[in-house]
Length: 139
Image (cartoon, rainbow, N blue to C red; front, side):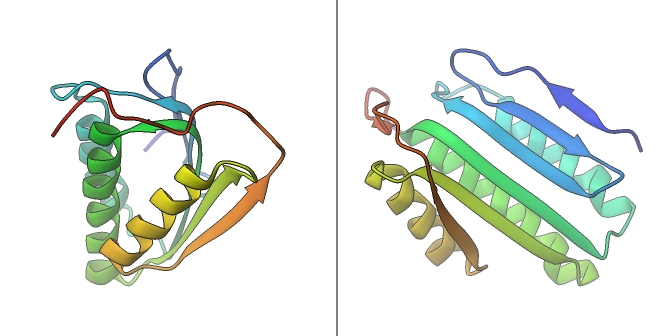
């Protein structure tokens, strides 16, 4: 298995999987449309990670904006990660970084933690005035 890097766009976050360190990072904006396959492809990629049966996996989210469709897609991504945790006893560490004044992104992290029932470490970082959650799309 090889490390992977997907360049972020205006609507999708940068994705890094460092296979050597078993580290995943999603950074940037997540404003996907309903039929966007970005997170579906990442979720399928998780199946490849499961094949190497890692003893630990660290995931870091550092998203500036998140739309409804993205929140839903991230939930399904994390549910797949939870399956790995349960199936092969992988220790999963999830870090959710948010701008200290971006309460909406923080709340989304808290909501996801509640829904997937895996601890998410919420970590405030430097100030940003970007909008956190865009409601232009519906499920």
